[in-house]
Length: 422
Image (cartoon, rainbow, N blue to C red; front, side, top):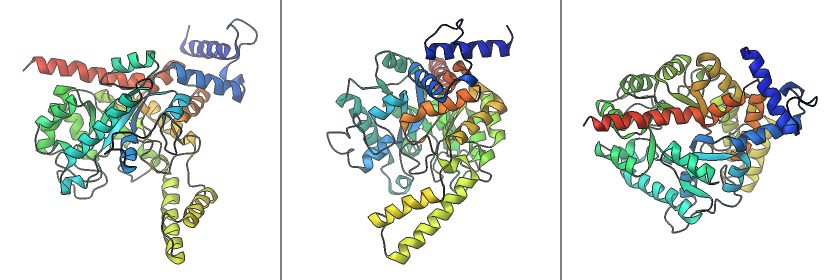
């Protein structure tokens, strides 16, 4: 059976399951013959069947801003909220393992207290499953996630966004591993002690610093994934040269669609990432998806700033917020879900299906999410779009979790080997 025949047979079979018949009956349909409702049902079923991992969700910082970090209780994420993530939305969308971003703003590099702030967010995340043990569980490995999934629990693995909390003490790498951190984004919006940031212009190290080289080696040793989102191209290439294991980009997209936007990854870097065996997790923010959206958002910021000044309004004023919402609608500033799929297509066409995953940046990119992907209930919409484009279910499962698990398991495996050499 050739590839095309196998592909068509698989799609016929899945379509048959959705409409409730066997694949040999006359009612069997191809994806192209399915109604929009049937296609949506198939996408919903796959979202619930597959483990969905999201490489970056900023729930911890959102909860911190709302004041739950310092109390004995946590935001009741088991009920519907105005944020992008909560339990009901996650259940509807089939989200099983959102990486909780332990985001440490760059200001802590100047003021101090980065480690303490990271610890406070880790403590807060840990309180979520303690408060809702029937809904959530911590997870330190892919195996943990698989066990939690079988038990109907949403896993909360953690990644630290910004290596600043390591400070100048290399032993803090092991410290944060022991606290449950399973990837570290080397820096954020400013150059730090580890490497240069794509949002900075200082180019302090022209890549990774000498101390950063030690950090990457220590991350390899203890089994923490190296995350090259937010870093400069030179720092990313340095990291790829230095690491002994595959790396990830936890929430980045393709620079092909956003020329000049260094926060996204160019084709040369995506190819190098694939050669390393790593994975790029596509960011859903509209300004990560297209230059057109970036231009619209820039004009919107200017126009809204002028509107507030002319009318003496604050950004919290209800008159202003209503105007801003209408402005965004009238000027169509948000990208479409199809553009998220375009980024996935681009990676697949460039390097193959094994090197792309999901890294939404939910609760992190603000009100910039594309139409059709406004919160964690909407993963089936993306699956539906991928089905329409001819992706096989096994390909979609790779995007949902298997590619990330492959990297994570390799990092674990090599860490054991490195520790045994000591």
